[in-house]
Length: 149
Image 1: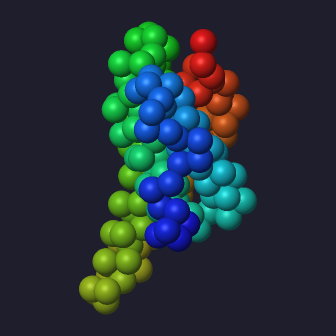
Image 2: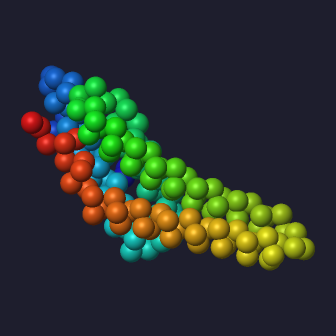
């Protein structure tokens, strides 16, 4: 996404009421997350994980901003899923960063340490993959965020 369009959200009109804007903004953020989920599931790269983590974080924060526009019970259920996903993506990213940091230390026992972290990283990645697939399968649970009632 280039900087020119970074803050642009299609169909957003400053003259619309706050709650109406919530559907537009959340639909935009949810579409970005779903697109990046597909990209990550196709190629589990460090960069794709990082981009997905950022997008999920943005979705969560926008959900917080518009939380008052939705049914509390439905909202909290969806919010908890997004928060959990963000936490798991964060764990995956932490291992990526840690492994890169350890590589830079160039220690004698690096291979032993690296193997342990690679196992933990793989476990986290499997959890992330499982949760992302579940997130996509359950995306209809987020329809209330984007469909006006």
